[in-house]
View 1: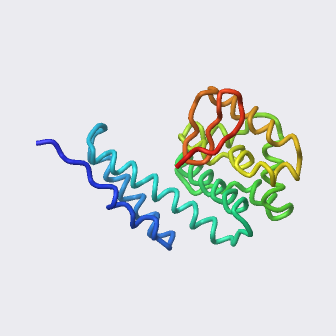
View 2: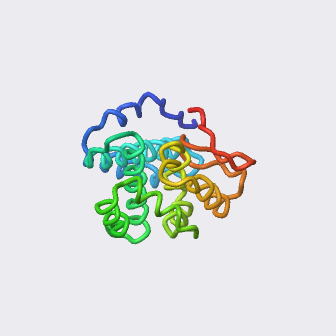
Length: 193
């Protein structure tokens, strides 16, 4: 008899987590759950979904530790937490994005993100996020999501963000996460959740 998928309601508790250790525990358990069940098994899919939800919650909790002033700053810090986790998975040890953290300390969050996007070249950070299917956490997406706030810093940011994403992804590729979808004409639009 085939195993039945577990209902979505079983994962609602993840959003209520308020401690990083709890989010990490759920991520660990979900990873173990994925490994125990082969791909295609509903329980493997359940483990994937649990890990993704716990990962998003872990990033939010990490961002909240820095007491962001608004949603744009919070999303920037969420993106930084996601990037540092991807570096951890890639390197097998805790790795901090020191240049970004130092720049945030000197210039502030939004200016740092603007500078990172304005470099023009596809960053190693964006490449790494794409390789780990976490491109929805890219700084370029943050710039597109908060277009009006970043236009105040530099009008060219929106075009640079779209250009970098197009170079990295095919134009019709759907970005990971509920935030932004790059349309065929290259404009950002909110992805309905």
